[in-house]
Structures are given as structure tokens and as C-alpha cells.
Image (cartoon, rainbow, N blue to C red; front, side, top):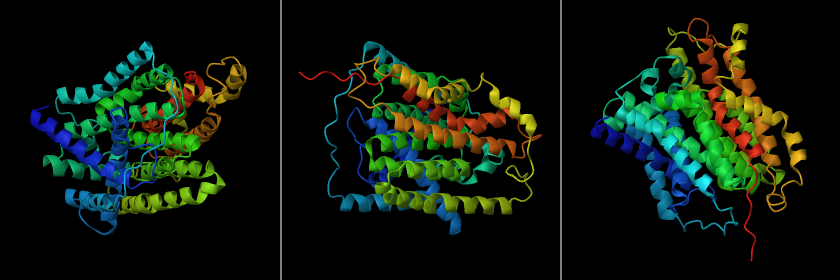
Length: 441
């Protein structure tokens, strides 16, 4: 990648994070969004996710009103909103004092350093590789992935055209590689909010990042990785909301889940929103319900309507989303391929043995129990969400018209990739011990 393209990649990522930071500032007060050296990476990861949400919202509204998706149309509303927020901001939110955390060991520092290297490897690979449109967002325009998610793909393409002058496959791959890094950061943050031990959470994050199917998608790009980031971001925020009643996390989860509808999966969007509402206490149901309704009105409904208009205008193309009478039993054996989905089956095992493992561990670790609650509620919520999501994605493959177009293993890979990070999150919550809080003098 030439220095010019590298600079354009940085500009595109900065624009995306800037849009997301504006949206993050408009959410209710919460822990996420600080700018201290320790928190700045997490703030960038959340801003990257919300930047995709902002692009999807702008693109959906532009489609409904018949306006072209130029860079100015996509960015201008958020510039105005950011200016208004800055002018009316009464003061920065200052969170209360954090409870004492376990100090990371040398092994934890080593695991964290290894995870950081793996997280940036896809971006380094893109920067040093030749142009390759095989699996990038640019290369997927007109293919099955673009047909599944024309809105978010078109929004990202418009961003690249505005920054680089023309779509470039390497620039698109850089954006998806950055999404992989943001996904790793949010996973670690969720485990930290659940008070899991430093070494355990970083080790499980490293294992997730090295999962072959996940790392391959991060290196080659693709819209399914963007969907995986959005759904996983909602799951990580759901952990923070369930454990700490963080209102910003609840709003973040509502936006992330709803945006899945414009990134290729209405089923995951519905599942995430329903589980978010179902896991909320009655006293906060009105607050969460208003955010879920607003997110669907802003994101999902315009996106679904625009996708329907795309399908009606492009009647000559193959219908890859015909869910009527296309049951394909021949695709069933591919779902049990452990070679591709090791961590997913570890998550299923964790869900099955959850109660047994909890009973056997009670009272055996006085250092980590007694002062920190085990994440039983979060495990139940994630287990329910994974079960519903697995059903939705399985139906998406089994009832989709894939015969003769996409190999069975590719169909299942694209379908199950969004569940990989939530599955790893569940495994970490179940098997990583709680932090050992330093004893006060």
C-alpha cells in the first residue's frame, strides 16, 4: 500500500470514528467514552461501531427520501449534531471511583501484548499486500453478500469514494480489518466489566482472535465481519447493562442490535432487541423500550424498506433470500464441522455444563468468591441470545436459495460467524475465574 493510500485509510477510519464519537456523546451518561490513556482504545472501538451505525442511519434516510448517498449527505447531519451537542454540553460526565481491580501479572501482560499484535496483523497485512478484491466490500458489490446487505455496503462505498475519489479494495479491507481490532477490544472490555481475571480474559481473547474462520475473515474482509462486529458489540454492551445497569451501555446495545438489520440479518436484530427487553427490570423497561423503538425507527425500518426497493429494482438478479420453499437438508452435515467452529462448540458445551460447573466450584476458591458476584445473570442472557441467534441463522441457511451458487461450508461460515464472538464471550464468563480483589490495609 502506497503512502497515499495509507493516509486515505487513516482519514476514512478517522471520519468513521468521528461520526461514532458524536453519536456516543449523545447517548445517556455511562462508563464508556473516557479519553484517559487506559480508556482511549475502548472509546475508539465503541466509536468505530457507532460510526457504522451512523452511516447506516444516514444511508437509510437518504434512500427513503430519494437523495444520493454522497459523502456530504452521509456526514453532514452528524457534523450538525456534534456542533449542537458541543454548544449545549453542560459538562463532561465524571464517573464515580472504580472498585479495586486485580493487578495484571506478567503472564497477563504477555497475553495482552500477543493479543494486540494479532489484532493489528490484518491491518498490517492489508498495508503490505497488493490490491485484492476477492473478498472485500468493493468486490462483494453485486455478489451474494451485497445482495444480502446493499445498504451498509453502499454506505461504506460512498465513504471510500468521498475520501479516496474511487472505491479501492485495499481501503475496504482496511476498514474491515479495523473492525476486527475493535471486536477484540470490546470483548476484553466486556470481560473486564464482568470482573474476570486479567490473564484469563486476555488469553480467551487471544484464542478467539486466532480462531481460523474469524482471523481469515479479518484478513480478507467481507460484510459478514461487519455484521459480526455489530452483533458482538450489542452483546458486550448487554453484559455491562445486566451487571452495572449502565444506561449508556443499554442505548449502545439497542443501536448495535437494530443496525444488524441493515447489515444482513433481520433475525439477529430481532433476537438482540427481544433479549435486551426481556432481560431488563420492569423499572427500566420504559427507558430501554424507548431506545429500542427509536433505534428500529432510525435504522432497521428505513434499511429494510430500502433493501426491498433494491430487490424490486434488480428483479433480473437471482433471489438469494427466498425463504418460502427452499429447505436444503443437504446443508445440515456442514454445521457440525469442528474444524471451522471449535469455539462455537465450546460455547455450546459451556451452556450445557454451566450449572454443573457452578455447583462444583462453589466454596473452592475463597480468594475469588464472596466479594465479586459470579456472572450468572449475564450467562443466562447470553445463552438465550445465542440459542435464538443460532436458530435464526440456521433457518437463514436452510431456507435460503444457495444451491449452485455458494458451497455449503461457505454458507454456514457466513451464517455462524456473527455468533463466534458472543460464544467466546460466554465461554470466558463461565470458565475464567473472578478477579482477586486486593485486601485493604
